[in-house]
Image (cartoon, rainbow, N blue to C red):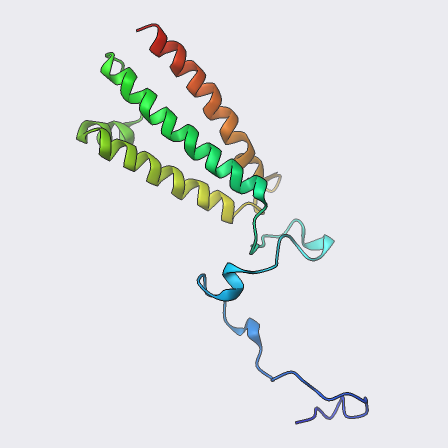
Length: 157
C-alpha cells in the first residue's frame, strides 16, 4: 500500500503503519534486554527525564562495589553488636534482633533495591540541579568512610 504523499518518490513505502511507540517497552523484551539507548539523543533533551537501555560498565562496577561494601558493613555491624555496641537504624535493628541471616538478607535486599532504583533513574535531576548518577558515584565513598570507622571501632574491642 503506497502512501499518496510519497507516491511521487521512486521508492516504495516499507513501514507497516503500526506505531511501535503506542505501548511502553516490556522490561523483558529483546529491545529492553539488548537495547541501544545509552543517553539522550538530542542536546536539548539532556535536562529532561529519560530512561536508557544500556548502562555503562562504570555504573555497573560502582553498583557491585557498593553492594560488596554494604555486605562488609553488615558483617562489621554484627561484630560491633556482639561487642556491646548498638545498631542505631531502627529498621536494621529489627532485622538484627531476628538473627544474623535475616539481617544480612534484609541489608542486601534493601541495598540492591535502592541501587537499582538509582541506576534506572540515573538521568533524573534531584531538585533540578543534581543528576542522580552523582549519588551513585558518592555512595561507595561514603561506605568506605563508614567501613574505615567501623574497622577502627572493631580494633578497639
